[in-house]
Length: 379
Image (cartoon, rainbow, N blue to C red; front, side):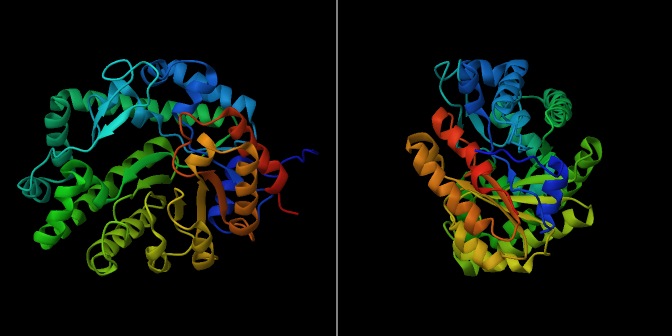
């Protein structure tokens, strides 16, 4: 295979892709976390609990596959010593509740109560999250503050390491949609009961979460110096709720978030786990070229290209199952289809469907990266 040279820097390529402008090749941005430890030959306990070993493992992946030019890092949010103190779910970790080389787990548990909507509405997002952490993790407000300060330092460290590798940071900061924040803290079941039984309260609470998230991410963007953010939104789609309810309750909140971030000159990458196929036309109501849609393999990415072509960049979507149990030829064939269909005309960020699975086959990851050179360059 003849290897062509890149004509753009990683940052130039990513910015142009988001703006739907011409690029030399497709951005390669798989979400690699726990797989890196397996690639580097360390246990997942070491990867999750030892920051230096974790970062060194990511370095080794990029050294092996320098075509990986954009890093959607999320590791400071996954770092076990901090996830045990702050974070919107209880976790089970390798080396503690789980075997040393097991994947970490997030547990769906009702932590906050219906009465805590009043706390959120009257005192704001930070007060609500503070109570959640106290109940879920047993941490005092002082311990939470120290953990958040440490997380901020690691966030800056990650961005600097990414840039030293020659990569762009796909996003520099991490946030979540109001439905995700509330459903993760209330539990999915209780949240959707609230949606049907006390919709006005939920709507008011979602707006408070949204405004708090915009302010928090604005401060973090100023600190980190990168104005792109991950926005987790896995629980608003038609897989979970009717389009009628989505239109009335969730779409206005999504618009408020995207428009509010845009006013702060921040581009949200909307991380859409679950099946958003039926919701795709609504995304045309969001400002063009001011957001990215990231899909996880559940949504029909080819339908997304058909509907959103010329409106926003699309990121995805090599299925985790293919990387874990498929063959290199199957990975190659799906990658080729992604490049030829979703990548046609630009606006495509080649990625995994959500995270690369921890048990991805190494030969399949090689096929994933090799496909960029084979199919991902523009004339």
